Length: 123
Figure 1 (tube, helix red, strand yellow):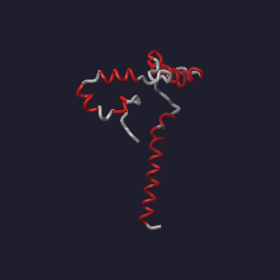
Figure 2 (tube, helix red, strand yellow):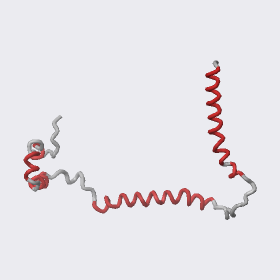
Figure 3 (cartoon, helix red, strand yellow):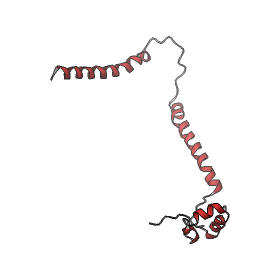
Figure 4 (cartoon, helix red, strand yellow):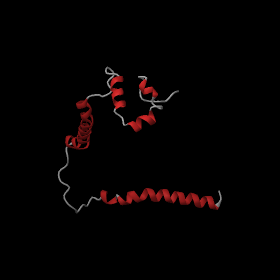
């Protein structure tokens, strides 16, 4: 081992030791037995602790999930398989489009008039 590699190893070991010791030194006051600050108050029971740290997050998750899913339940599914694709309503929608849009896209959207959908890709 050369002197240069020994110095590098010492610097690495010192860095690891310092990075490990700094959080422990910062937390040293938490382990003090002679606390002279405010009164900590009564301890929480096990059920209260579980309610705060488990019950409240699970409850919030369920409320948010309910609020996200509610519009879909109220409106219903717009892509129901039993309804299928309706060529008549697609033709009405295509006829209602402005004339300048239709002229530029009629050549590309030839599949829309054949009853197979509006995509114009051919594979």
